[in-house]
Image (cartoon, rainbow over all chains, first blue to last red; front, side, top):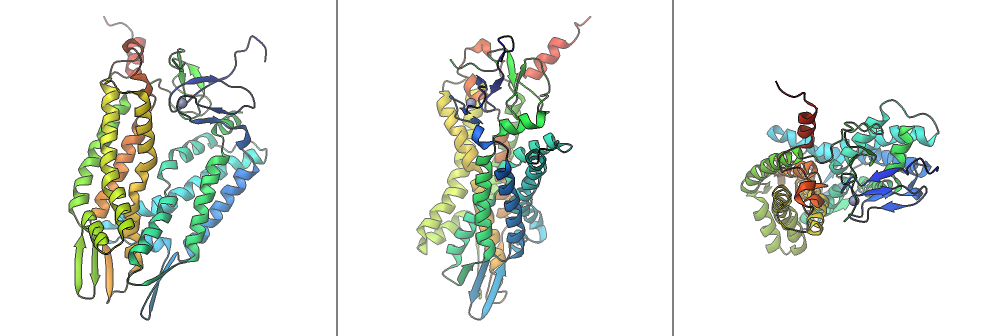
Length: 200
Length: 224
Ligand SMILES: [Zn+2]
């Protein structure tokens, strides 16, 4: 870097503290501990694989039952779609909200992430509207509630276990795996590197 | 004193963290709109906060769950449901439900209001405490949705039609809406204001006066 060109700066999105970017160095905000630059989490193959595997798990989790209940001679399964559509009549609107929070938004976020990351990993040019797509993936982050749904399953199970025999179905384990993968995806993603890559 | 983009006469992008000269309106790296401090955000915070509080009232008065076992039908509000669990011995679950559906939402309302007020009126309270409170609201706020999910799971699972049935009550809707409004309220808050309130008065725009507005006034041609 020539003495004439000032170092690139980065401002913490949470608290506005400003830092000089040291190439290749990890950077966290000293004031609010927001992770700013993580050189190890470069936008790479691992991130893409985790995202693709997550997408596959969502498809699996939709098709299999996630809780099975037995009482006397009757068995009933619940798939995630059943659960989301448990509200009918005037509460149908609520069904849509639940469906969105546990399924549609996590799936949409994954699709957007793959759309943005795949060309970068394959060393191709970013697809059109990639910036907007990643912006939306970030905006939707708090609204994707897969992990809350999993804990909800456990709570529901303990509520009902006294009156019937309940077991977790395959979709429950897929969904639990999805939650872990989504967490890993977040750790594997350096937002700074991604925006820099999209800028080129 | 920590150097900030603002104290350096610059503006930081809240989406991609890029730094631009003060007057820049749009981030060329990610396309986000830039504001040094979003004072409009407080209006939005209060708007969603109020809707959240309003929706929380019916969420507690209406039944959350309509249970029917054989001929025994009952309608439980959130609190009644938790108390019933308590008497049945499921103390842990009762505590989770009470925490997620009663303690957390009320604490959230209180914390958001406190954050907005201390920032708006520059009340003395350390930025450390405000930051911790903001992080707590951000992290824990979404978890209030758990009770809605539990009700949905129970309802879809217990479809024995003759023997027993569980139906979600109207409170589930009120509660879900209340959680969403409260999340919108917290998300509207410009967290950078948390640290500003500790700065001397002249470094920050007056409460209610937005940077956009100031920019517009500056660039407008003189009247007459
Ligand atoms: Zn920071």
